[in-house]
Length: 120
Length: 130
Image 1 (cartoon, helix red, strand yellow):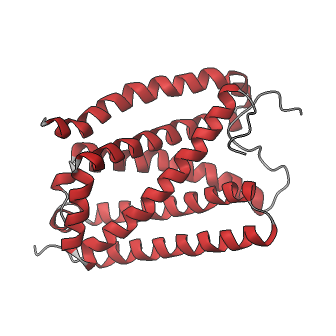
Image 2: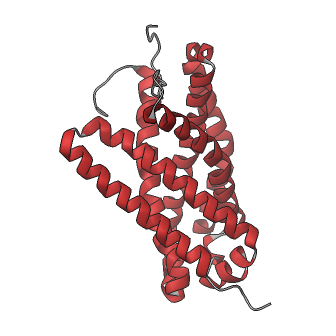
């Protein structure tokens, strides 16, 4: 279903929502395990956090933030259209508004997270 | 009413029942997560850097206050509800019949386990000595 083309922005908005949702699921599994280690095995927790703080970990963290921000904004867009159906007419504009907010909020956040890779 | 425009969400079930309750629950938890998840990410991935978040940081700083323990436990609870009900929609799109039941049983158990592990650590990690 994910690969069957149904139409422009609305279909992409749906596909990205699904992909980001599954990606966040995967991170939640990791995250519950690592935070459990903070009590059960603090040394192992510190090791995992070192991995999160590595360059590759920071890229993953940025992608996680992107998935989270997209899912949050698009989820709000869905709720708005569900409860005020008149907005369904402007679903495309709302999606572009999402991307504007995504860029404005996301770029500075990505900068802060990725800066240490470049010795910042 | 014909559906003239494509959209990401599913249409609200017209009949009362569990499907409609789940539909509302998905949106209610989604709204809560908009605040809970973005504030969590802002604090623990932006304001604090992961390189400073040792186990000692969790015990002595983050979870030294009951407020943040309660906040994180609430976050965990709402995340699990939203994630399990969300994956239920995805699984329903790709699996049917007994396979669907089997896959969903797996996710229900996974959700319960994650909830249990998260609850254990947030409830039992010792407070720092005063």
